[in-house]
Image (cartoon, rainbow, N blue to C red):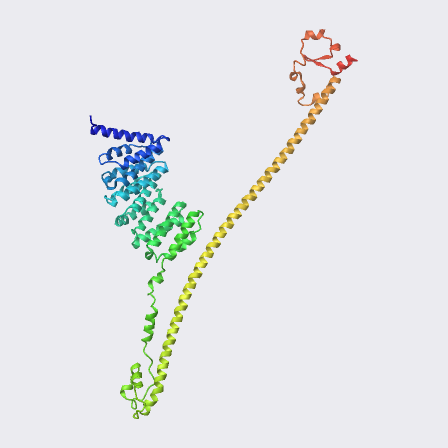
Length: 527
């Protein structure tokens, strides 16, 4: 009997759920993940809905590897099926937004990758449709993890999209600015990454948008206490300087003063980013360079110099000079050169004009050459001074930066030296206290030993002399009472036995309810 469609779908869903269950076991996780990837790549149009429903059933009660693998399956599906998933786009993105609340960073990173994969491969819906769920999540979510994750997903969508909508992103910039100004929003650094991508695609190509962003980011660089926010703001300013340099010429000088004052940061990554950003802002053309006309070329300058009209030659008497030679210029010089030398009709005025012609030509060309040499010398001096000024400015900046770095290193070394001296002082103080304690303990032990010697001496003396001695009068003499003696060594007797006990022969004598042996009695008996 052939399997029915209902039984086939049921068996397929059971297979998927079994693989998902195996993900929670460390021994079977790898094989189950491989099988799920294979299933996702070979799905048919009818098997996509049950597969997605099984994956979407994952919640926070599952283990972290299970949740992470389920989110990664969204990327696999997008890469394998592309626009086939367009009808399921809202469900896919809703699942991604829900998983952004996960406390595990690996799961949230998988969500960001899944959002980028959907934006890159599911291109049939509009860019705004793909972007909208993450924008709404950034605005409405109160969980810090969800805010940061949604902003990173927005960045992934803009970066991975083959055709980002510039008009939509330009309308989105004011909402981003309001979120950045909100003190309750925790994902400022992640949202600034979105601004970097927005500027990169050309959505900040208006003067108002660019300068508003510069104002906000400059405030973050100067006043923020979060190093990640300062670093992200510097990255936005660097991208603005690279992409929209022509819109920032008027604010270059004022901003560079702030950047130079804040470039020495206590965090190394922030310092490096600030240095790159300042280099990018220094490359922005100055306002004077943009307003001044472009320099003339050398050939045009020569042409303008050559076209300067010659100076008027010395005045000649009109009555003696013909009208055709009253003109000045090259034509006049050519006519005079063509005159024959044997012409006897030249009058004295024409003869006198020949040296005037040569002198005028010599003076004219000497002046032109002098002017050209003067202009070229001025141009060379101006270019050399400009190059030298740039080199001097660069050298001064590098020297200042090196001196500031050296001062920082010197301060850190001084702090380390002071800390070492403090530690050495503490060590010496501890050693001195230990030595004084040992000496005090040694003196106390010696005192106890001398006291015990005196007590033993008094005890031996008391055995010879029954009268109370100084030892018995000392404080704490109760230690010598019969309560502390061993019964086996000093047996106790009753009062009746004491009457019949021979003290002289045994060497014992009564003391209270006990007997004390006289050490001299035994020696006396032996003698």
